Length: 217
Image 1 (spheres, rainbow, N blue to C red):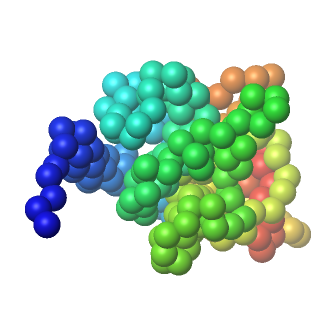
Image 2: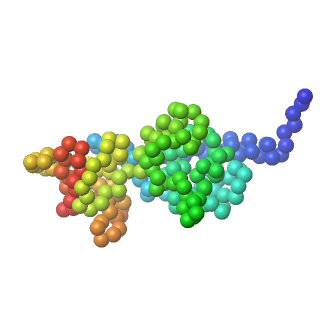
Image 3: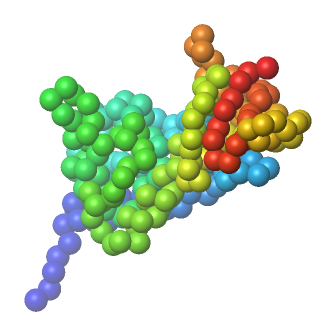
């Protein structure tokens, strides 16, 4: 029995192919905008994501999925840019279900899954194959580097990406090495509010094992 393709079927197929090609281009850009510390693991800052994902690109990427992108464009740009980047990065392909998984809001109007929830503790909601879900859990840290707070004391495990671009040991004390760290632009939050704008700024770091203790100069 001969099957006939409707105009809608053709449009859906063309939209899927266009999205796949755009995803390839986005992955290439995400690789190029990564910050690469001397000693740490690479990361993509929020400022870099904004350069990759213009509103027009978000609109283009999500069109053809059976819902009106314009109604959700602001929410995706503000609350789901990191999550969207992880999905593209791990080559998730269930975009027909993006709305049902990520654009659901609770009674307060808040997305039930968004960038605030990174790191997600499990990725079962993605469905699909186990490898993609595992890659999502591992690679989500690439897109959410630690935002350093002035005079911070705390512990991060090895999965987190610290935004220290250059590091120089300047002494040793009872609690370990003291280093001078240059923090990537827009990754240092001052106590009085605001971030280091477009320059890398030095801070001092005490390094007893895995503990992070910071102070501004």
